[in-house]
Length: 450
Image (cartoon, rainbow, N blue to C red; front, side, top):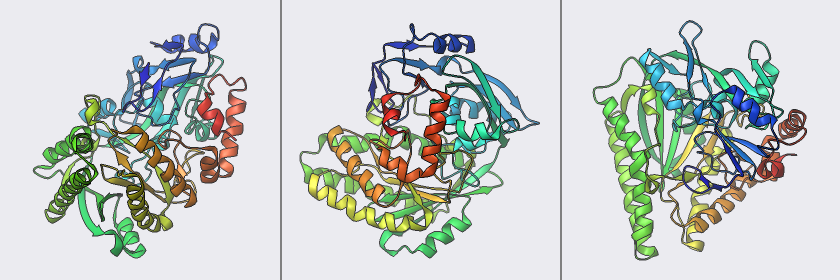
């Protein structure tokens, strides 16, 4: 049995293959008897949907994790698909370089980054999706044949492959853009949700190079990112403290309260205290003017997080113009759910601002800038969390939210059809042409395709 990062998804394939090179990968995909379908690729398995799930073959790509080339002239890095983003970032940093988007969850692998949904609002100066900076890919098709494409040679195929999620074959090598190492500053602005206006949100967007909003109780805390010349005196220490909060402390505290509070009243009181501590921390950071650090230092490594310190989340993105109305509607939605079921998320909700991006056919900001609503929770009662996710999906769907294929649990066909429109039909048809025998098509994607 294989578990995803937070333990919420269990997979029991007939075969688990671990290729060491592209020849191994070709052999796996070409041998239908020894490696039965559906065939799904796996990296660090941080996905929160059954996109990897199969009773056929899982191909674990983590054995192919070499950096093949860092080209300081072309400003690119090329690596095998199993390399984790955070390890590549460390190698780049040693040469005075960094990724254009230093994603928060650093354990995503190169293969997943090239072809799956991702998000990052704090490095959103241009694009907040990692695949948008992939300039070339090499993959093995469902029939076991090697293929490659690049922006220079085949931009149309790159547009599809950036959203392929392993449905057109398995990526074994990818090239991403890089740039010189930069320092960034995080500043914080706490605001009561009920006082926020669209004009104020638009002003924050206009003056930010990257923007994230935390919903902590009734307070919206905007985390504003700008570039600076150098880190502040204690910037690296504060960045390390922030990483420690996310890969250990925040989820642990939330789960501890849920597990040990004697009743619902004490549990609610405990979470109120925890959120009060969050708000006090953000107010102190705002008062101090924030802090500056080297940009890659914001990426978090979750490999050593014990199970008690892991968390789950969901992601729905909304047109930026309607986001504030959605945020203000979410507060009474969450309160009503708590009154009805006694469940509340034990971690702050995150919201990522993502700029318009047409690099991939299933870019969730294809039609314009988007802002997300991401409830986050350290799960101790899975049925309660699952019920919340189902109701939140309907909340988001009614407001024309856009789901992610790997980060929106219980996503349905009606959700993707509404969110992606005609592009979902275009993608579905391309998948069937790329894999007419359905070798890569597991039940999760089969239920979603048009």
